[in-house]
Image (cartoon, rainbow over all chains, first blue to last red):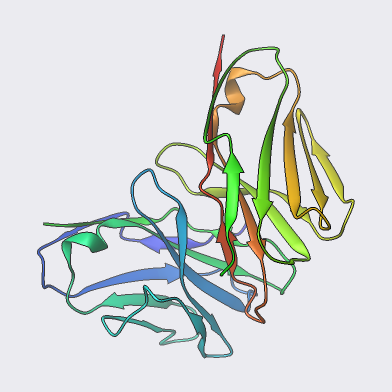
Length: 113
Length: 112
């Protein structure tokens, strides 16, 4: 069964550094999302992406965050200058149609020191 | 702002017992999803509930949706240890992007 693939599985970075989290969604999916989950807490929406542009973003998704789909397959989340509070598990998700469930990747655990 | 609230947040139960997890949401929605998450793992889709009165069952889990009451339930029948996990409900509302807003999650611990 096709899967959403995320790399790396774990990223450790120093405060103020830039990180890029990568995702390969399932190939025929049209809607793409990033979510984050701070340890032991709820899953929070960050941004949705459709038709090669951001369709919605949350209050969390400030100017330090950006998303791209550079080559039609990969889907990236960039954090320009990481803060301690960015430490979380970041999940990429995709779906083939509006009513389908989201398919989540295995996540990237980001640790900011 | 949409709020999605689950209760209980933690549930410890004996194998063989029945229990229900509740998911309330604050504004109108026509879709609700249930997900399972094992510790340190991804979220696995369990059920998609698309209309009022929808009921879905898979094994020992049964989910239902009452859109008028803005309530979904996840019923566990004769729990087994393998069902130990965190269960999330998630609601789509007021958006053409289909984003999901998640509840806080209910951590289920089934003891032998």
